[in-house]
Amino acid sequence: MNKQFQLGDVVQMKKQHPCGGNAWEIIRMGMDIRIKCETCGRSVLMPRVQFEKDMRKVIPKRENN
Image (cartoon, rainbow, N blue to C red; front, side):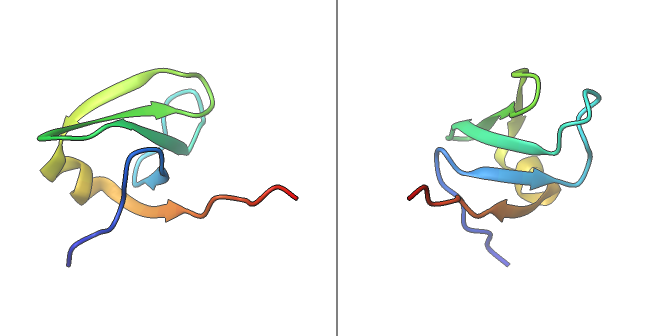
């Protein structure tokens, strides 16, 4: 199963960040993926294979009217 995600998407991971945040923004893509915690701003770099394994879902973007 191939998961669909792109730069700028906000995703939910299997494990919660120690700060309590559960939403992560994708800020770099390549062989490695860098994600930034939406709650505290810390970033994590991980191999793409590990990211795809640990990602639960892409959180839909809210449209502002």
